[in-house]
Length: 208
Image (cartoon, rainbow, N blue to C red; front, side, top):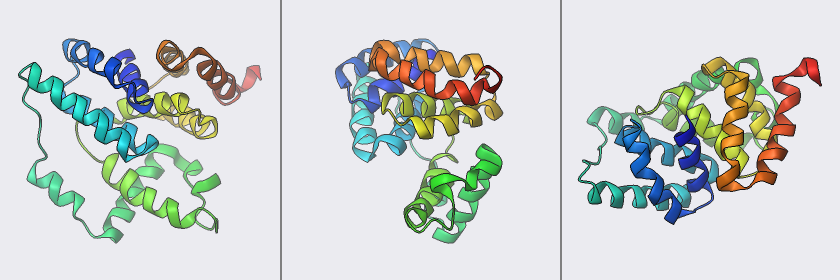
């Protein structure tokens, strides 16, 4: 769990030299090569495609240096990415509802929001319909990536939403807190402390 958070934080902040140094420990700790690739893909969903591309290039170089066979997409996975947009949207909405429950229609995700609906429809189609559906990481691990990414990128509002959703994907409140704390040495203590203060009311409402 901790190395997933570390890789995500370093990728999102484009600290590529440090990222390179942590790929070997990730492999040694049992993260599969495909899983490492998927961490970078998931991080790119939140930080932008250049983040994923640059991080995946570093991963590919390390795989070559360590004689690790780089996983490739299966034909089934490639076909899934070519599904019609309507099919991806349907699948994306189902996955989003599974992850966020009733809150999947709140805030910027609200389908009737005139400012965000057009862009969020793309996020549903490709973020949830494609990336969250990819093999290589369990949803619990993708949640760790999301929590780490939103902390590192200082996206506290989105972090609050995903922190609650993480509880439905096998993470405990204490593990969400620890994931945020784990970002501190790599992304800075102030962002982690701010993130902790933001998630406390939603994770421990009785104490707020």
